Image (cartoon, rainbow over all chains, first blue to last red; front, top):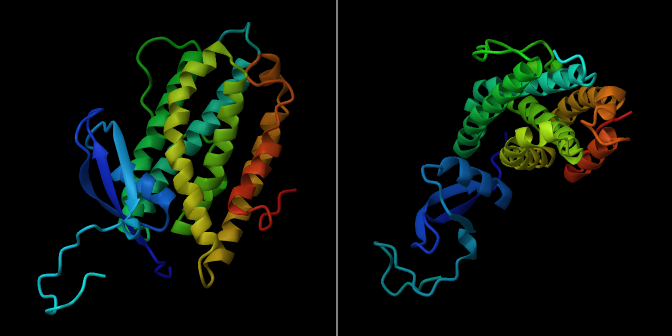
Length: 77
Length: 214
């Protein structure tokens, strides 16, 4: 089967209503719908009150750390 | 068996067909799903197998109650022989997705119709099952869509597998639709349209053009 372009989705969840929203992991999926299913089946260790999957390419960075060996003067893209 | 309810026999047969398919699918989701195309798809497949086997057990237990049997529920060692031939024959990822998609879509339509009848003996038994089944449906539909839009020989092989599955499932839905006793006993609404809804659902993955539903 040809390797199709897969995207990384970050998963955030809240254990209790009003509790802290925590980053619990990532999944790689072909599309948003599969990402939701993968997240709910993979991270089922808690009875989460909220769970969100976010396509990593849609993040809007305010501050992004440089890589450890980034070239001097290289700008964050 | 309660002789006062003529539709009970038909309902048991219907529930056992659903349970048998879920039982066999649960087995195939582990057997074939363990070598899925990626880690996430495999993990989800194994998790769904547990769900399908759980649903099968719930339906077998319901049939046990409908037969009026008392005492400890019987252990389940195998299906009752009503599973679809194409589901039994699942042996690779393509046939697994074709079987999972077609069977789950058909089962969802049947259960939805049972729910619409608002029969008190039915509603409480299937509400949770239907809620849990939604993730299985999304998974099956998404993978059916992926295979349909793959490269090389995969779309053609998927089309062939889907055609065989759809043909068998459509015939079953036709038979269920024509069982007057299910409607007369109030398990299905009058003039239930299972086949029409099935054809409508196939449009979701644009499968209508590639499957030959008579």
